[in-house]
Length: 113
Length: 111
Image (tube, rainbow over all chains, first blue to last red; front, side, top):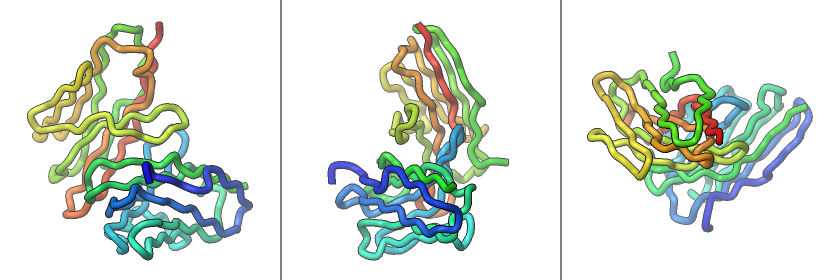
């Protein structure tokens, strides 16, 4: 596609529920990144993929968070047993090569009540 | 200590002013450096890459000092449209592509 597409743009859920956030990167971009951003803070690294594999998942805060990219294109960030502290904007970005310039999607705003 | 640290904001400046943002990074083996701009409630967008020799793009000048592990961004002749948050970004020292963002510095340019 022309840009990075993220769905949903907004998600409100209750504490304890399961959430999936989807990212559709720019066509042909091999690297895909997930960040989360809280108000007044910079984007916090979660995980990045090179192709289908997770090249670095050191930013995932705990085992409730998991991400996949089974065909090397679309990625899904999965959050189990959501907590209020998970509320943030989850940003996805892609780049033609790892570590190069990132193009971000508009983000998915998650609110956990 | 955070891997990438920036000047706390906000910076409030009049139109036409020159403003400088500073950023320090902790890992001396870091390889690539960038400045991103983020407008309120929008996604970050690349402003410019930062090269060892320093580089300029119109009113914007970026500099890198590897010895001091310091990056700067200078904006000359500020415009109202420059109001945004400026994010310093550093590529990690490993062989991979992890990009680490600073907390951002907010700039507000007033008429």
